[in-house]
Length: 104
Image 1: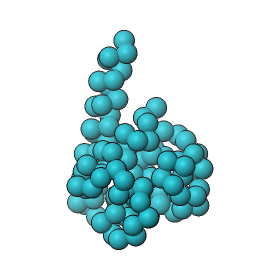
Image 2 (image 1 turned 30 degrees about the vertical axis):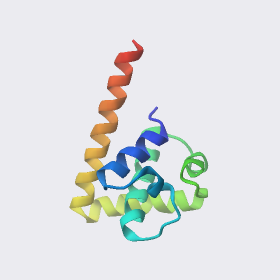
Image 3 (image 1 turned 60 degrees about the vertical axis):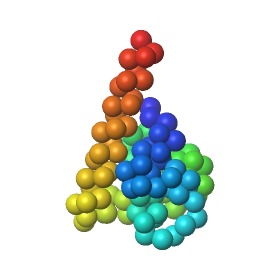
């Protein structure tokens, strides 16, 4: 399972933000869209409940559920966001595989 902090950090990096920006209460679009994409990735990669993911994002489960839905919509509607999200996913997966090799 991919740690939530890794997802937050990698998405923040792709969008030229800090991890703190992903968790912050900032509601400006340049922070909200990456946050929603990170929420979507968190659900896809971890299998954790919205309640558990909410703890990591300092949000309640309903906000996480909305963020996941919105993140999925953003990826469908905006190609440039999809590219950044897929790049983040590739980096997360590569990091996961390199960590698997270290543990072996």
